[in-house]
Length: 194
Ligand SMILES: CC(C)(COP(=O)(O)OP(=O)(O)OC[C@H]1O[C@@H](n2cnc3c(N)ncnc32)[C@H](O)[C@@H]1OP(=O)(O)O)[C@@H](O)C(=O)NCCC(=O)NCCS
Image 1: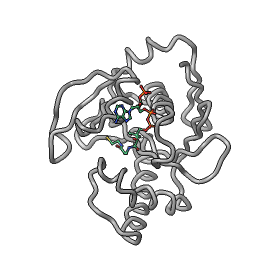
Image 2: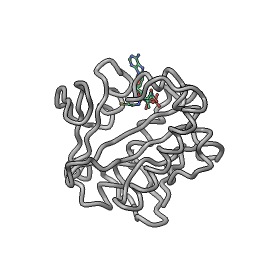
Image 3: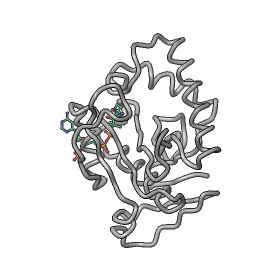
């Protein structure tokens, strides 16, 4: 499967993405907001391998997971974005994303996340997407607000500390999309409606 947006391409992670993800996970400005501690280059590479393996497994087993994000013109992955299963919920999944700092600030995370929400709401029996961010992670909270997700307050249900929780319902998401969007689980091309 593959999702395309005006500026991006999202596809299942490959082991060849290991180096790009290791750079991402070794980057202090990114790690600061993810639930991972300090990593040297070797540890970041091991973490990246594990992340790719888990994402590939979740995509195969559950039909959604983190996808590698590249620019539409190609090149190395600039980060990931996707919808991961939650351990105790079958009707809701978690929106996740992280991009290399060079790519921040021009709406790419929002563009990638909108494509992922659209893909999953249209192809999976998923009533809600939820997302979590540290309250001080202004950029991440803003991404979820721009996506139209509702702020539900703080929750420590899935992580060790209270995080701001945001949610989107499939019914409202799909109702708000005015143009038909084609999304097939296999070989899909998703065009964003805005
Ligand atoms: C969160 C992240 C993916 C956002 O990527 P991005 O491509 O810059 O996001 P977008 O450009 O789509 O949107 C970011 C929004 O936050 C705003 N923003 C960013 N930093 C801000 C700040 N310090 N104060 C106020 N607004 C801020 C931007 O202006 C933009 O809003 P706008 O479009 O209304 O101007 C990126 O910052 C990242 O990878 N962070 C580290 C990993 C992470 O936090 N992942 C999420 C874990 S919950």
